[in-house]
Amino acid sequence: MNHLIVFGSIVDDAKSTAGKFGLNTPDFVAQCISFCLVALLLYLFAYKPILKVLEERRQRIAEGLTNADKIKAELERTEAARIEILEKANGQANKLIEEARTAAARVREDETQKAIASAEQIITKAREAAAAEHAKMLTDLKREVGRLVVQTTATVTGKILTPEDQKRLAEETSRQIA
Image 1 (tube, rainbow, N blue to C red):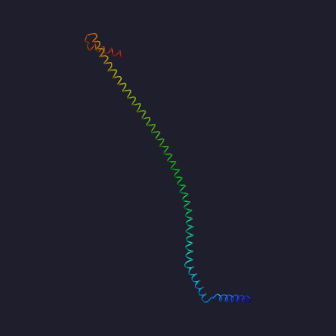
Image 2: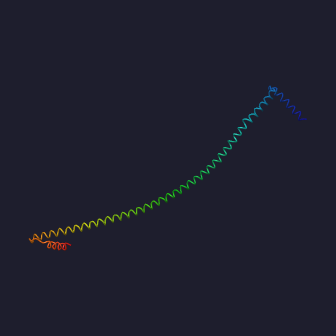
Image 3: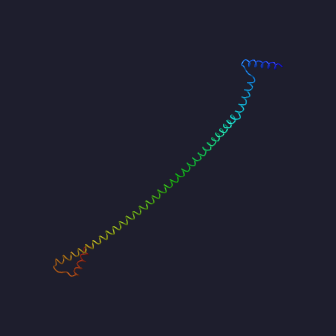
């Protein structure tokens, strides 16, 4: 019972304080009901959709972070694959360069051998041509010397030489020149 007396006393004190401040109980109750209705409507139509949007946004951010991690891992795999492909390409390029150098050296050697053979052939032909020209010149020289000897002998001896004498003198002169 003491509690009732204390509670009654508190209620009386609240009524006297409310009266001092000019509290109108029916208006206060109507305002409380209006506030509760507005709070309920805001909760249903504003707060819940906002919470839903925030939750969706939180999920999208989490998905974005997960996707970013996946993309980062994929990027690392792609980078490793790129490096591996570049290393293979460099190896193949170095192999091709070495093969090209070997082929170039082989071609250069072949061309050098061909050039040497061609030069030797040219030199041989030139020597043969020079030898043929030398032989021809010697033959011409022998013929001319023989003719001069026959002419000189005919002039010195004062007689006309027969074709047989001319032939014999030409042969003797040729033998002596050779």
